[in-house]
Amino acid sequence: MPSFNANLLQLGYTSKASIEFSSKQLMELLQAARRKNTGRNITGMLLFKEDTFLQILEGEKEDVESLFNIIKNDQRHEKIIKIFKHKPGFREFENWSMGFHNLDDSATDLPEGYTDFLNSPMALISLNKRPKIAHRLLLHFRDQSS
View 1 (cartoon, one colour):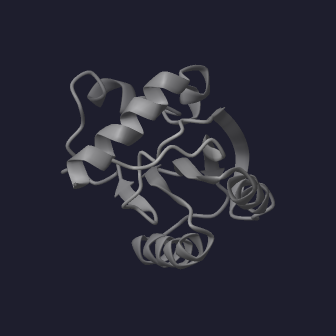
View 2 (cartoon, rainbow, N blue to C red):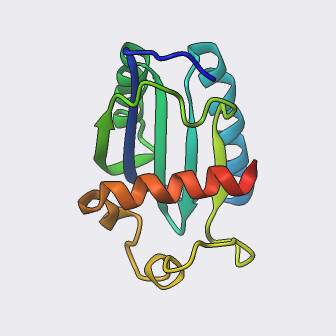
């Protein structure tokens, strides 16, 4: 069982891509994030649908907040909305330098009740009013990839 860490922070956010990402560009972004996150001991999950990101970052409070500030200043992101920020005490994505799912992939296995929701325009952005649903969705994709 992982040890309790009172300084562990989880931060979830959504953003719109300010550029159109090709599949290759998404994979390059993901590979760079995984390298950097490993060095910072940050774990998490990234979901992408159309031009929208939903991401959870977890790690030491200072590291997560520093990375989130970098993301907020990244010209590839706009309309950044922090959905939640809390201290879970334990990592939920401890084996993921950055898990990833492209929800534009028609083969994506969605949990019951999410298919219609995620097919609506701006679905990921609207999660800012539903932080628990956003968190459960990210955990679902973590569990599907285990």
